[in-house]
Amino acid sequence: MTSGQPRVRPRALRRGDRIALLTLASRSRPEDVEAAADELRSLGFEPVVRPAVDGGVAYVAGAAAARAA
Image (tube, rainbow, N blue to C red; front, side):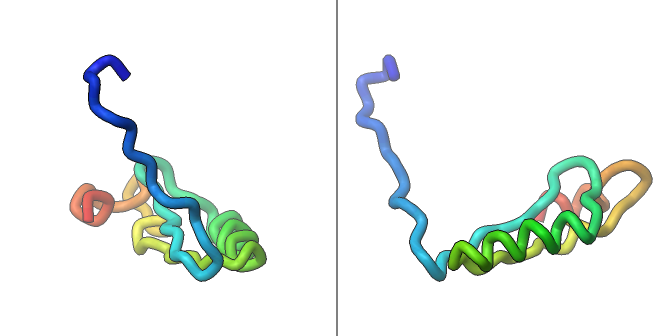
């Protein structure tokens, strides 16, 4: 950092923390999303699947408004 500002780092994740699964561009296959959610659960986290992950409009993961929400 060259701004002279101290680095701000988030705290480390802990068991029970929620982690969002989201897609900003391309759609995800439902089986891949579920596998990722299962892996997070096995590590002690709470996955939160965002609505646009498995939806889709043409080649993107959902309508622009849904992806921005």
